[in-house]
Length: 326
Image 1 (cartoon, rainbow, N blue to C red):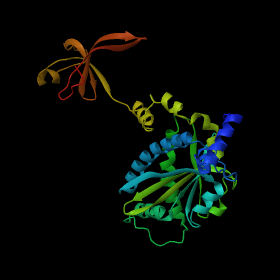
Image 2: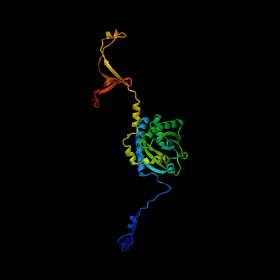
Image 3: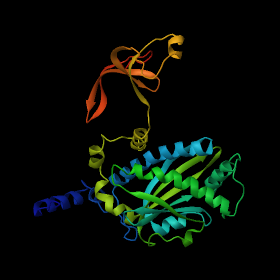
């Protein structure tokens, strides 16, 4: 609680005001701690929580930039321009009446989020996918069936890695659901509900525009306690790149031929031509060479493990230019 002035202090303060030693404006400035608060626009999220959401989407923009650059075969740059909390009605009012809205289902929150792509950006993508230079032509905001399928495909695949951006916070699954051009037909939240908007400044070739992601409160609410600096510190040991785990999983599934060579022998062609069933060929034995592909990478000894022939590796074979193996 604030300190309560004694009667003596009050008298001293009034005397200073009467003598001119203290101005009334000085007192009002020192005690002016009133802050304006708009009850119609409740601020549900702290600055720390908004910073955490910014970090999550910074990781996502890096992956999305690489994906779009490869798909469109042109210069693509995506940067976060704004992260803010507004009402859903304010978000709808801020976007053009004719635009490209991609709706996604978000599980397990059982909610929906929407990505609004400025028509300039969306049509630049379509132009590149159809073999053009990426210069958007004048359009009325409507898409043909072919253009809708193209936008759906590239946006849906781009958001396949969105789940990985949240893996340090929550296991979510995002799936493309629908596309819409008129924001008035889109109702993923009540008008006065607070939503988080993430505005991406997007450049595709010579075309620049905005893409805005809208996250309703029902999606963010279950993970609010985890959107703290402490949560990020505890997960610091995890990979910063959301793609790393996926790359590791893909590499684990790669089949590599491994050959254990017991020994070798040198024979003239005449003896090879006269070989018969049951003949015995003497070989030079020693350490077993374990070949990865066509290169010998390890030396080992023969053995048995769980009833199967096996090789126990006891030496790495150093190859030219390979300084890591000794």
